[in-house]
Length: 243
Image (tube, rainbow, N blue to C red; front, side, top):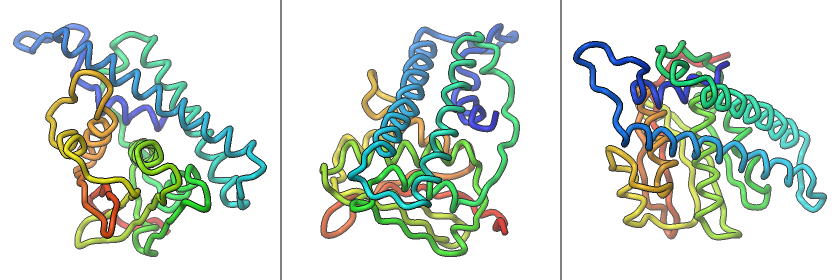
C-alpha cells in the first residue's frame, strides 16, 4: 500500500532480522527509537481521524462541498495508513527491512486540499501557484509530512490563530510553507538540528518529518514570520508537472 513506504523509508535498517557478517547489530537504543516512532505514527492518524470526525459532525463549522470531499479523502488515507502501521507492527521486523518500492506521484494540489481541510475555515489561509500545485510529489510521504506539520501548528499555535499552507516554486525546488502564529523557540531549532530525537516524544514529529523529506532529497527549515509567527518550509526537488 502506498502510505506504507514512508514508514519503511524511515525505519529501514534500524532492526534487521539477522545482520549479515560485519553488519552492526541492532542496539537497545535502536529498538527504543523504533517503538517511539511507531507510537508517534499511530498517534498522528488517530488524532487526525478524531479531528475529522468532529469536523464532519460539528454543525457550527462551515464546510464547503470541497471541504467535505477533502476531509473524506484524508479520512480514507489515514485509515489506510493505520492499517499499514498495524501490519508492520504485528508482522515482525521482516516487513521493515525490504527496500521500499517507488511511491506513486500525485499533483501537490490534492494533498494540500486534504491538509488544509484540517484547519477551520475561519483560521485557514491556503494558496498555491499554478506551477506548484501541478508538481508531482510522493503521495504517502508528502501527506504524512504535511498532516504532521498542520497538526503541530494547530497544537502549538494560539488557539484562535491563523494557520497557513502556501506552495510555490523557488529555483529548482518546490517550496511548501506551513505557518502559524506561534514563535521560533530554542526547542524548535534544536529539534530541526538533532541527528536523533531526544528521549521521549518531544520533537519526535519534526524528526520524523525531516527523515521523510530527506528520503526524497529535500530539506525541512524554520523561518520567523513578521510581525509574528513561525513557518516550517518543506523543500523538495522539482519534478515534471502532472497535468
